[in-house]
Image 1: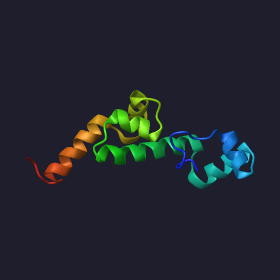
Image 2 (image 1 turned 90 degrees about the horizontal axis):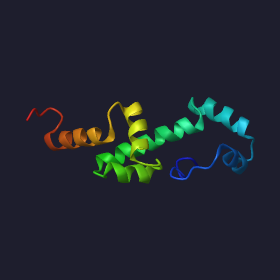
Image 3 (image 1 turned 90 degrees about the vertical axis):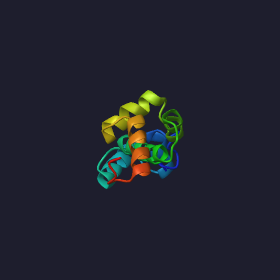
Image 4 (image 1 turned 135 degrees about the horizontal axis):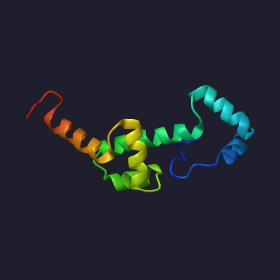
Length: 106
């Protein structure tokens, strides 16, 4: 459900209600299954989706909106923390690698 509603995720309370459980029980079960709380999982899922869009050539500002970040700086902050480089640098490096190939030094 979180992945389907990535751009407009439900609150923990609403999600628990839809699943017929309490927020505490949902949080405990989610952490047990995924090793992290739902909000952390959602942020990671957004960054995974952002990587795919950046690799496809989508502009970082458009990526931010497409995956549910409030703006490009919000994407930059989380992307850099998780991936290690800002989205623009990631996109430029991926484009260069695709053009030259991984072993080409030109």
